[in-house]
Length: 155
Image 1: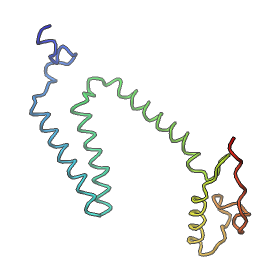
Image 2: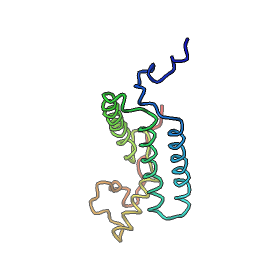
Image 3: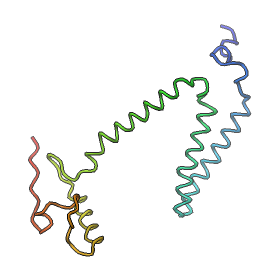
Image 4: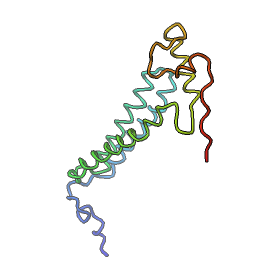
């Protein structure tokens, strides 16, 4: 096999799309500098700096990787399909998991700690122990000191 078989043109890329090695080394240096900033930022203990370094720099780094290393411009027609598929799967996952995660009771389980946190929050927020018709409040019997029903035994 000849040495030209691994050239960018042989892989379906036009020869003018190739970058010199120094280009990729510069991008690597920028990514490394952003990594250092994103590690040092949270050490300052300032919430806004932490958020900016955690999310803002992550977005910039992802953009640089996608733009310079993933060659997204070559596969333009597939990017939209991939984006829509990713978003659909994300919505499906959140929609499928969300109802279970957000509940405090299930068929054979009860999240007593979550119920207590909600109840304590309601007491602290309203200044007294009444729930005031809140749909997320404890059932009527539990609000008045009665013990909740035991979950069904597992089979």
